[in-house]
Length: 136
Image (tube, rainbow, N blue to C red; front, side):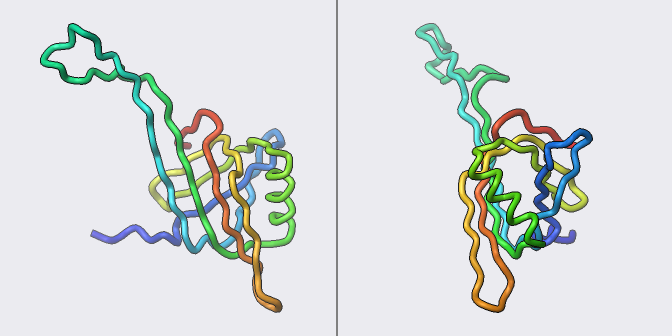
């Protein structure tokens, strides 16, 4: 079985227009996706055998994503800064190669831009889900 290569993960920022166009950030050299959920306990004094009971379909789900790499162009750098400063929840697409594409609103929680003189501009970004996510 072939391994899934990280180079197949791509981040795209939505432009907010209708219909929405998604703009590729650039070469993501490192991507980390963390799914987490906080369950709701339905345990009570009469729960059989004192086992915890969790309420299916309830609770808080969160997706956090961090990525770093080289920016594609100056326009996307400006867009990232504008969205961060405005604290705007924008639609993002996370392409996972041939597996699937995750889409939904995210807030930028961290944005670092760097680059040595005469070299490419690099980014490091943190995103947190800000609404319902879906596979498209």
